[in-house]
Length: 134
Image 1 (cartoon, one colour):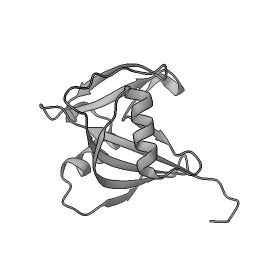
Image 2 (tube, rainbow, N blue to C red):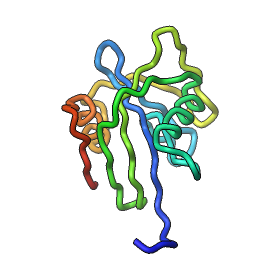
Image 3 (cartoon, helix red, strand yellow):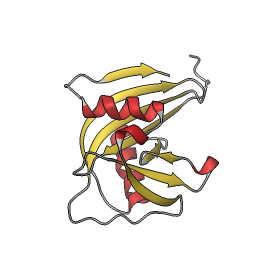
């Protein structure tokens, strides 16, 4: 990769509820897709800072970062996604930003193929960070 080449990085949270369902947000942009909370790194941010900022913006609350479970390269958008296991404080209520129209807890079998892999890697985390390319 050359010095002036462009590529993206993002940080995303896998948050489970008591029924082991995964929290996804429905975007109000780019096809209104469902996705994990999180987003792109701003210049000068670490992956952890980005995750905290994005979750605060998108969910209206802080998350507790437990661990980094995987790093995934997506060649179609020339991007690496950092996936973290996170929890919401029990007393926090979700308040969506204008970037998302709704949130929902999804069962594993309802996830897209890519999301299934990321969430399964997170759920089965054994201390070894996974690295995959799609």
